[in-house]
Length: 92
Image 1 (cartoon, rainbow, N blue to C red):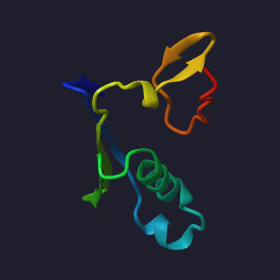
Image 2 (image 1 turned 135 degrees about the vertical axis):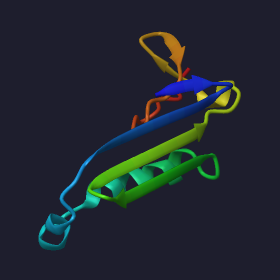
Image 3 (image 1 turned 45 degrees about the horizontal axis):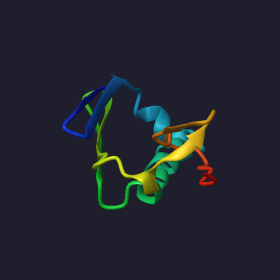
């Protein structure tokens, strides 16, 4: 994971048995992540998932943009960037 020029980049990969995908139920984790990204960073993220040669890879890039007051919220009496999935408290 890196952050450069207000752009967060994240890559992860692991080995995977794709034959197990056909028999398992569920699989909502990646769908939930994609939906949260759409809600939190509409038009400002890129999510690429690849499944090939026994490897499952994900690459994520988020344009964090300039830090503005409307994207901040109060935590422990200090202003911070919201975390993915956090419920912001805008009471200042």
